[in-house]
Length: 385
Image (cartoon, rainbow, N blue to C red; front, top):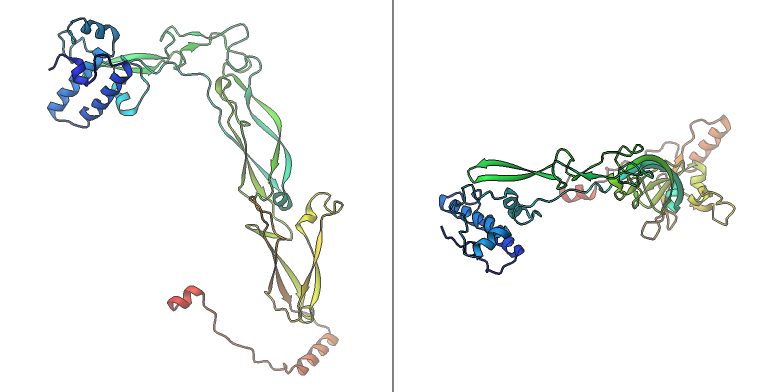
């Protein structure tokens, strides 16, 4: 094979470490045995990896530049190879391993906390017009004794003797590629690179404790069941005193005794006696604002009148614009009032006499009724169903 590692990687002799690494990654993606299993490509892959082993090591590169043997006479598979499997993995997955097989280093004890969720129930009027609530939550908060570092007062974490503060240990294995060196998290320090010899007694070294607290949450107008209000950084504080996650307040709207909500519209039903539906009348209905605390004394309209036209049939709907629920993005829905005509079930003799007299006057003593075919839906009329 060629003895010039610069030629093998296709880089200039003054190329920096990043350029060399990028060139190796590009070639490794093309030549790796998992991508091109033919023997010629495997041999080329070994040559490229051996060249990278030389150029990624400052001492080996300097020795070659002074005229020394680039591969020490051992070739790729000999004892002089000892390349880092981490660099091959970096070539495929874009890892952050340093040149010459360096690892990713110790991981921080400080991590972001988890998000938290709390569910609350509010009234329909509160959902429509907004409300402010005081919430009691129990979450992980920063330990005030150690301020998040996990060590008892007067002490501090010390470097791990097993990994010497690197957070990783090297494991060497033999494979068809030669000696493969992989880096694994240190089991002694769990990859942190440091050990806490005297943990904080309040948080047991975690940097956080659980505590109850009270939060004020403003529920905006127009929310509905399932809406979540996000409170940034009010969730669980992270391990090691890391930043807190978010707190989500999920809304459930309680049923209302008068109104049913459908989107931003409100629906209600009024039941009228037969005589009122026939003659017409005026009804007084409550507004949703009437449920707002102190609404009656703040100039808010708490009721309104609706006219029932003479001859109103059961099932008739009236749409009152702008009397529904405000939308989260502005506007307001409608109120749909459905009339149900109630037929009397018990008549005293005088009432029955008057009703029969009315039937006679209207020629309705022996009504035949009107029989009609059931009206088809639009889909049924189009397709003949």
